[in-house]
Length: 102
Image (tube, rainbow, N blue to C red; front, side):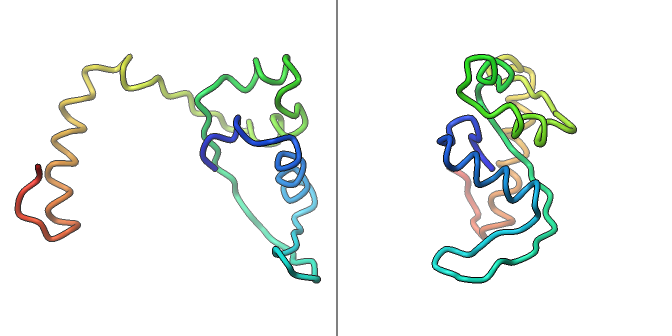
């Protein structure tokens, strides 16, 4: 899930329910479906701070923060820009069948 910090309280509650009960209902569906999921979340804000400000559910935070990976923004990792650009410059033509990357 991208930008989990931007989810409304209602959506947070629904995500928490799925994580805790391992059940969900499809949109417009009537039956409950059992699911076995793994959730990977991304946020551009510090969730701990949002929990303290009561803008993010504490119980959901503890459910999703089992194995946090903190990755600084690219602007703080300038040494990674050239290798990343070279990777994408080589990957793009192969993946999309293009001969030039502009």
